[in-house]
Image 1 (tube, rainbow, N blue to C red):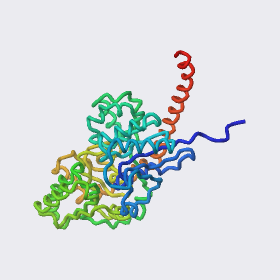
Image 2 (image 1 turned 180 degrees about the vertical axis):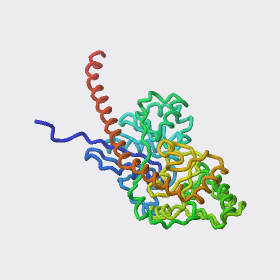
Image 3 (image 1 turned 90 degrees about the vertical axis):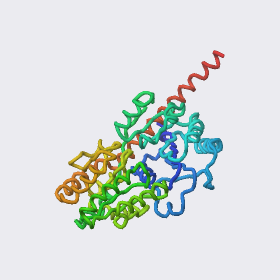
Image 4 (image 1 turned 120 degrees about the vertical axis):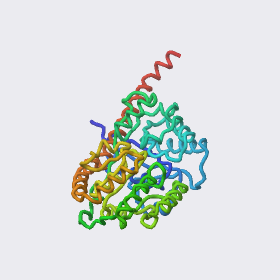
Length: 395
């Protein structure tokens, strides 16, 4: 008679230092997009309980658990002890390091040591600057079972930059989006022909100072042009203040609106309303905002950075410009203003590309990765059990 109990459960702890980040929300929702086999159990582990504002604006698709009630940063040793206790109690077989921003190297190294005896480990590498030399050269990093990168270019960079182990450790899994959600209610033709939109966290890597210089040139030629910037403003307060001072200096402050963090519903309306979406990033992986704009039919101008060039094609799905060049960025934005045929063609083609980056396909790729790691873990445990009698006999 066959085994009626079904496959062994695969318990995955998806670790994110914080849940108070819209990019983190997009990523975790993407992981949960596909229907999972009943034997795969995903839980998000985070340091602190999310704020009331986060829980009002975001309804996570995955259950979550926070380790500490206080917002005070725990010591690496204490964190590792609490983390190891939870691993044993929940019988976790895989730890997925999903979002480590703000965690710090010492704490991550301590948590990795706590996880290693029991669980297989996988790291998702979002942008190149995310990983300092301390991470790359550490034994903890070399001990990772898998490294997920968002593009082939990122994989090539990591392999060339340091000894990251065999290429078989890497998996290329780009980000995806819920195209049906961002399309909903769009394509009515009621776009504001003078409204530019940027969707980004307010930090220096997003290149928003370059966008202000480009917009200054646009506004001189088209005085009724406006720029909306949607994204969290509290990550780098000094940079946010410098942006506002720069807007004053350039004489465009009254035409630039910093909206702060907005709800998905508001963001969808902005994509449908805007002339085009501009992404001037200096350092990026595969931008969720770019994929959302494509799905919503909002034409895109963006810089050549990260893995988005492996998804979108210049002149067919979007307009690419070199990063750090506000003059060329201004020229691309001007083309969007004066060439309606170009806008329509780019939006039409980009919608098709967005369908190919469906978040459910990405979620299924992660499920296959978890199953692969779990199978390796079972094989390793079986090998150890077979060795035990011989070892005892030898001794």
